[in-house]
Length: 210
Image (tube, rainbow, N blue to C red; front, side, top):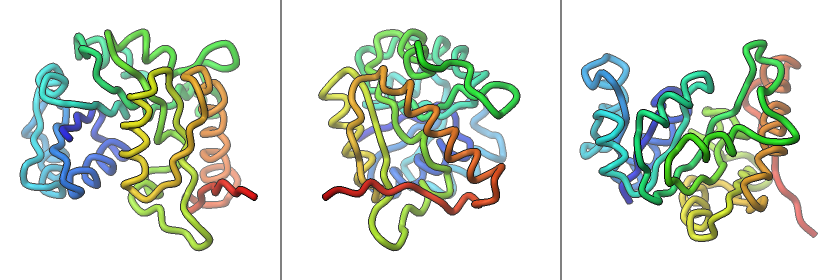
């Protein structure tokens, strides 16, 4: 699969590198393909990974991940143009400037805003409830890490779930895209435990059944 990455920081870079090494062709969106950070990212990816203008990346990709900082997300998605029905995996969280709350909660979500901004995309929320370090290495004793996803398009969700599972997560369908209204606050729980309350970033949640 050809996967575009919008936002090549910790989350986008980590997922892009892992998918690239798994055999997918990865395209990193950037305004400066010659920047040291992009050069380093390409060096850590498979040899066929490339970087380019955001519209070029969207045109070349079968699926796209958005992992940009929340304040930049609207502008980046609108600059991307028409997604032409492609899967857009939303890994963002609408964290407010105080880094202690969300800009949206209860009546809407960041994912629903993303769906409005990204023209003709099929949005699936995923990869927002654990840190990039866990995305890089999701191996814990006791079983796989739970990774919830949600969306309104069944085929898009099925594709996203496959991309989640191949990285070693327990992919769990949380329902329609409106379920991002609970997944984004759930992400804030991980962030607060990891950053504020001393549990460290080496934590994750597991989904148990009986």
